[in-house]
Image (cartoon, rainbow, N blue to C red):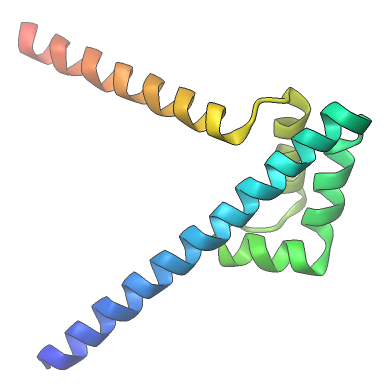
Amino acid sequence: MRDFVDGTAFNNEQGNRARKLFAAVVLAALDDAIADDKKYGNGPEQIARWARSRDGREVLSCAGIDPNERVVEGLMDFVGKGVRTSVALSREESERRAVAEAAEQESRAA
């Protein structure tokens, strides 16, 4: 029984690593489209073409993202804003931490 649990945990961890790898590919595709948008003005169209392609749908699925039209529109909107993924992620993370810290301070004060 223990070997089965260890094997399942290992397989689950491998799956998580694979999803993270494919998520990194999605982030790279977004950054490439943002660069194209700044250079040629066609970034949203580029990311939409990629996301609708067979390879793009496969990568999105492997990253744990349902490759539907709503997702494609979200990717296009993200590229249209022109904020690189590393900046967007760090800003989002810092905002999340600030909210969590404020909530913790409120709970201490109460």
